Length: 380
Image (tube, rainbow, N blue to C red):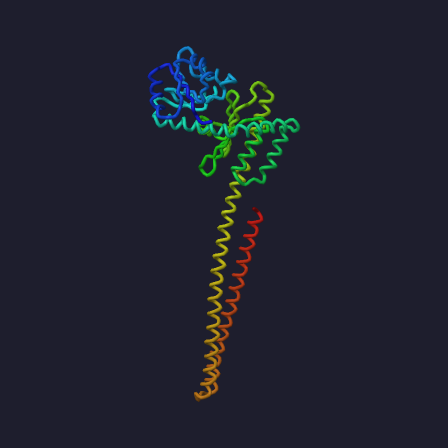
C-alpha cells in the first residue's frame, strides 16, 4: 500500500502550518495534533502510516510517545520520523533505540521532507510486497528449528557459502541463516569503497544507514535495548529483535552472530580474492599471448636471416669455383683464398648454432609461461 495518511505532532502550531504548506501539493491525507496525548488518542482511528513526531513537547515528549506506539500491537508497525531542533549522534541513537525509523532536524527544507516521505513510502511498498514472503520464511524457520539445533543452521550456512562467489548471494544466504535463528537483520557490505545494504524487510531505513556510518569505526560490538550491531572490516550486521527477556538465549545468540559475521567476512574476502586472481590470470594470459607473438616474429626474422646467409655463401662459393681457375694464381694464392672462404663458412655455421640455441631458449621460456598459466588456473 502506498503512503496515504500522515499524522503530524507538534506543540507549536506554527511548525504544523509549515508541514501543511510543504505537503499541500502531495496526495497525502494529513492530520495535525498538538500533544503526545492527542496523538495517542487519535492514532488508532486515523491509522496513519507515518507519524511526524516532535521530540521536545511538554508533559509527554516524543521519545515517550514513540515507546507507547511501539509497545502497542495496533500501532507498532507505524513508521515514526522524529522532528527535532537537535540532531546530535546521542539524540539520533536514542531515537533509534525507542524504535523510530527516521530523523529530520529543524529547520528543514521543503524538498528534504518530501524526499524523506517519498523514501518512507517506498519502504511501505516494499514491506507490503515482502510481507507474505516474510511470513512464509518465518514459518519455514520455526518448522526447521523444531528439528534442528542452532549450530546446525550455522554449519549448514558455512557449507553453503563455501561455493558462493557473488556478494548478493552471500547476503541472501546470511539473511536466511539469521532468519532460521529467528532473527531480523540489516546488513552492510563494504566493497571497493562502496556500501551495499540488505535487510530482512527488503530495505534498510534511513536511520539504520546513519547508524552503520556512525558506528562503523567505533568498535566491534554495540548493544542497545533489543538490538545488537557487530562490526568487521568489510561486514556489519545489525540484529533488530534480540531476546532481551531471556539472558541465556541472548548471550548464546550474540556469540553466534559474532561468529557468523566473522565467517561471512572471511568468505567475502575469498570472493574478492578470487575476482582479483581472475583479473591477474587474464592479464597473464594476455602477456603470454603477446610474448608468443614476439617470439614467433623473432624466430621468423632469424630463419629469414639464416636463409639469406646460406644463399649468399652458396653464390659466393659458385663464383669462386668458376673464377679462381681462370685467374692465373699460384697454388699458395689459391690455398689462401679457399682458406678464408672456409673460415667465413665456418663462422656462418657458428652463427647458425647460436640461432638454434636462441630458438631452444625461446621454446623453454614459452613452456615455463604455459606451465605458470596452467598452475594459476588450477589454484582458482
